[in-house]
Image (cartoon, rainbow, N blue to C red; front, top):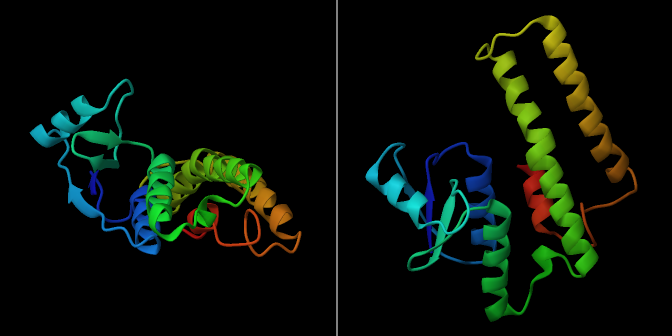
Length: 171
């Protein structure tokens, strides 16, 4: 399988895919794609029905998948055909749905705030103290969600074993 990305270092979504691929013992070759290149245009044109975004996994010749959560699920299911173990996805339908909720919350609510805070702290984004304080307070409210969940003496985000939401959480 081929993974195409515009960021080979420091991209949470790419790291997530690479870690799960390694756990699943699936060989995924990573290919950097230059922004504005013919390869980028070709790959974006190959995505069917949706606006393609990177990273993209080519899981069959000419067949691309663009969402990191969908890519990871495909990797786990592909691996499960050999080892009969889909536990990384959750052992019940509820656990599988809970994982989608947690990862979506982390990816769409928490990570944008974290990235913006990092840019502010390291001087890559100008901000006033008031703007910083507002964003920091929103970030801390998100962290309270995790704190409350993890105070229930859970070892894992979902279920009783390691799942993809645990992997995403520690990234």
